[in-house]
Image (tube, rainbow, N blue to C red; front, top):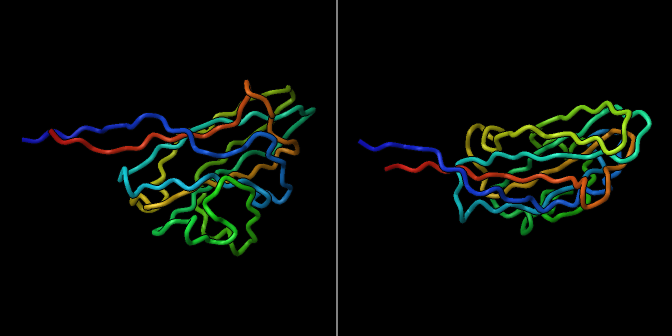
Length: 169
């Protein structure tokens, strides 16, 4: 009788330049897109994404960070889904373009201190797509805290993922 166990791949940083990301009063516009992640080689059945954000120098901050996932059957770099092109870059989706995004997480912020760090709890990428992992995917982050994210090497803003497979012995 075969025994199946879960296998978590090593933590993989997601290429996404979040340091200094400006606040957007509109919430989901004027954000940042991560570099595309290609799942056609590893064939993960899921990916757990987690990370953290650090706000800059606030007096009082309210709002938060919104994390979205964009999945595709073909390379987003090769076949962009405007305004998303699968590269580590700014993206400013219109209301109609936001329909391709899957909402993944919201991290609320209410700060009165400098350099407050907020964690993004782990979330499942496949879970956002009915349990099926996209061949290609990327993240989109926007924030409306009223201040830019912290810029320095100690209080960096980053996201990473652990690919998931199942082993059968």
